[in-house]
Image (cartoon, rainbow, N blue to C red; front, side):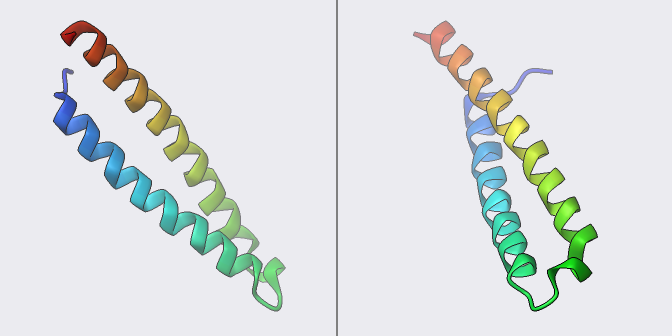
Length: 71
């Protein structure tokens, strides 16, 4: 499937926003009085952060490839 640079840039922006929110969620849960109570939510959020970081790396690679080909 082919994507335009504009589509990839917008996807990156959306993922960056979601990553920020997830990182804040982890901080909130870890800062609670009994963070062990939120272990499953913290684990899920951290796994999602990793998945989104992988997605970002792949999107950045794709944007770089488009710029090389378009130059």
